[in-house]
Image (cartoon, rainbow, N blue to C red; front, top):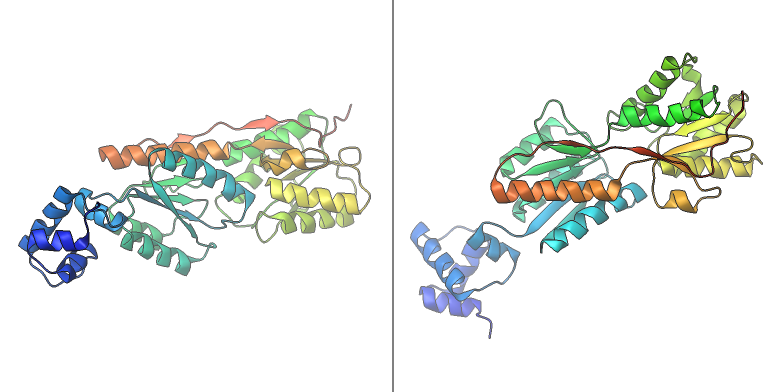
Length: 336
């Protein structure tokens, strides 16, 4: 029979209320009493919950993951990699949907601190000073995914977004396209917005093509509706365009749907290349050519990095993950 809180209280010669207060970190007992109770917990193997285990071992076998949009396909791929890797090591995952909201992020960090998580994975969001300060106060390992900070020295796992966007644009150029539009996400987004636009522009410049700001459309995020709005603008205002670089696969799928609505055939009338290589890219009509981020692997690698930091107390090196073009059927070659 598993030991109970009454067994702990009896052997430690204290009340069950005292044991409960110690387990929940409440005041009202001496340091000597706390040590005695924790020793009895360890001796009896009493494990009421993760908090109690954490008080004994100083670990709760729980990780916190902060994501700005849990419902996105992008987040789902990363989260699968994190959760599979965590569960292989008998760890649980607390997922926090921050919604790119500073107040919500801070509140979730407070919750994770109260839950005494062993480490945090912070994903695809700008690392603000208040977030960093709250994390450092927790004194636990932290790894970033699909974001990085030059100001704050935290290890990260990501692709080189500028280089990946360059590769996508270069692929279109090498297939004979010279009049290329881009549908980006939020204009001033420093994570996936600015670097991908810069990569697109750099590729055009390097191949002697004109950089026209009017050929870049921006949206509210990197989702389906942004792709729809951007493609509407391209169809209505940019009649000479032969190809579109979409800054995410969800944007690309939105663009495909609008092209189809207007009777434009992809890739015969216009070519589209995406970014991410989400599972939905294989299912679209036509199947989407895209630049691949290995999102599942990024989640897996980041979790293993976090475990290494938890187990050794040492920092780890950041990882830039290679990207590659996945060629399907949404880009047509134009013979010069």
